[in-house]
Image 1: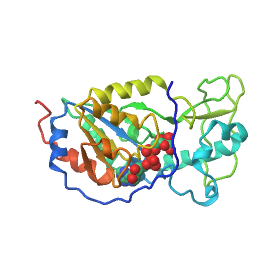
Image 2: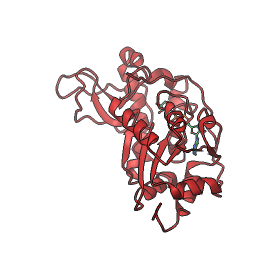
Image 3: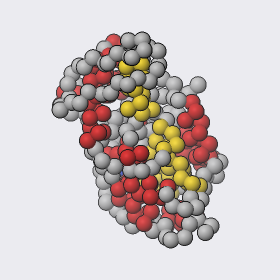
Length: 274
Ligand code: APR
């Protein structure tokens, strides 16, 4: 079984605002009837959601998120971990999908194209932009479940006006155990069906677009490599070099909210092979 492993440390790029579409990337996008888009925290950065590895501010400054997102942290102090996720959930609820999310929804709705979105993000901004997501390979922030019996319950995150240090997680309706976020923590297994479906779609695509991920966290980071060795053209959209770059056939150094709308706007009126 695969599980989430990752080193620390990544540098988030700053938006470049470039909107000229590289000709080869436009050609690949126009010709692709089956597209797979792998997204990471970078696509939500322009919606104001801090990436996992961004410097934490305020109350959480002294905590390493890579240490909070672990089964060990939960076992040691569930109220601290719950408070941290409750604050992240508050930030996500306040955020709106940005032009990058919206452009992918528009592309997915085009006739003659099958576009599968595989995201490492636990937010719901793709869905709120109108996209169907094939796989949330690292789970979903809002898919809460009991940490003891595993059942989904009716619990929700508390509404917070500001970050707080500790909040007791609500009890499970069925067994009374503490309810936890539906995300995959470091060291935990990925939801296997979602990951296998993601690999299949990436390997069968005419184009794999990799947007806003550092490519440091495995096994999701293997997807571009698996697709690439199978002959799928891999295009990276990211303002900064990443571990994906070497597997990419084409690299576009731009932010998601600049690049994706520019690309989708230039796909033209006729679908692939139309
Ligand atoms: N547009 C596109 N990419 C951007 C933008 C932007 N506006 N801003 C930053 N980026 C890029 C950064 O250059 C970086 O490569 O987004 C990437 C963010 O990297 P990470 O923070 O490592 O995010 P991600 O790759 O999604 O992390 C993978 O690690 O923390 C765990 O489980 C968590 O799903 C997460 C996984």
